[in-house]
Length: 212
Image 1 (cartoon, rainbow, N blue to C red):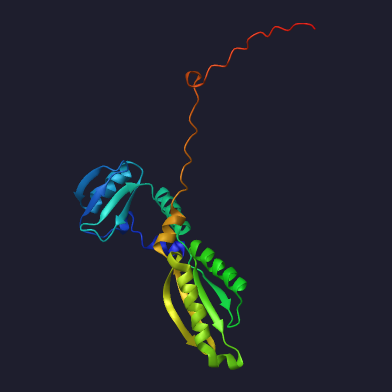
Image 2: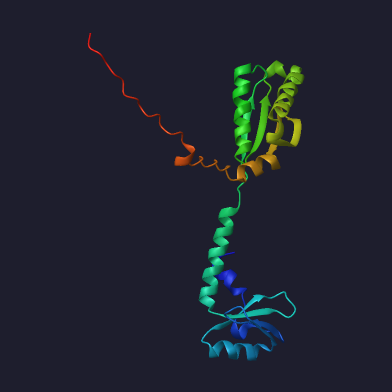
């Protein structure tokens, strides 16, 4: 829906057809329930518009305000809400039946990092040729990954075969999301030193020297 279509669904002024409306003025004060004609008359006297802000309420709620400003504020709040929405991305981490320990640890850490960033992880393992006879080895690797990831992720889809590929999908755990959103702990301020807390400097005593 484009902006012009969205605007057409907002009733204003003479387009408000309810028998009665609850009116709020431009300062947020409740003016009570009245017929739309009276509410529109008040709005016109103040060189403002009558805008239906809650059409599903009984009776509908209308506010006396500048319609242009209303659209600007609404667009601003909608854009802010869209910025806060997290786009879920599925990132794939590929394994093989013959994966060595170093490669396994590298890809496991990669999966943990993706989950910590709020993305889902698809762990996949493709069997080639005669490897299909050793599917138990593939399950062993993917199940090990699930155990090693621990609290960093939750299993959304358990390991399963699709053709020649075994895969599982992991989602960020609530604990990991909370840690990502929590602000970093503040470092305690260093204790201020006061002259009274400092030990007095030792006074140097004069040393007598004698010539030989």
